[in-house]
Amino acid sequence: MQLLLIRHALPERILSADSADGADPGLTEDGHAQAGRLPDALAPYPISAIVSSPQRRALETAAPVAAARGLTVSADPGLAEYDHRRAHYVPIHEAKTIAPDAYARILAGHLPEFVDEPEFRSRVHEGLNRVVAGADHDNTVAVFAHGGVINVYLQGLLGLDRPLTFPIDYASITRILVSRNGNARVASVNETGHVRDLLVRHRP
Image (cartoon, rainbow, N blue to C red; front, side):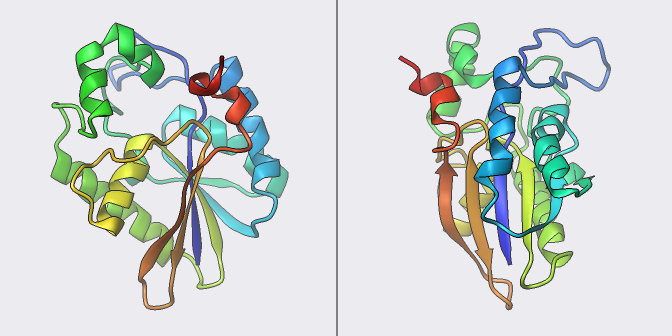
């Protein structure tokens, strides 16, 4: 089977959430434009199911693909990002000036200090293992999640030292192939050709 791991598109900044459940931003206008590119980008793949993090930014990114394919989106709490109960959310390119210490730590490949790294890694792998277990061998499942989620899954598959090794861009696609015996291998990481012109770090 094939997993298409898709990071959510660009979300809004929330510096102080009203909800006791923490910040749960939706997509910006640019984020919706990025998400709108995904149905065409994923057109070559015979997607049989769509699974998402329960967070709004992932669900909104999944929506155009679900509409184009006539599929429903199943949410799995195991795919939530490490910051899902925090009272604020700052997109990474803004964190460079708003939270420089946190930005430097993430840039160095480490999760924020408040994260229980073993718990987070275990939760993510359990969530993606559920996705694999629920699919047939010839299925392709689109999974809409987060940069941290995708990175720690890759860390486990590749035996990497750092949890945040790869730059996982907004609306990027990472492909994982899973054999009949359950062995997973990485086919590609952070495919962005479909949104390159919409990514902040590639703008002049």
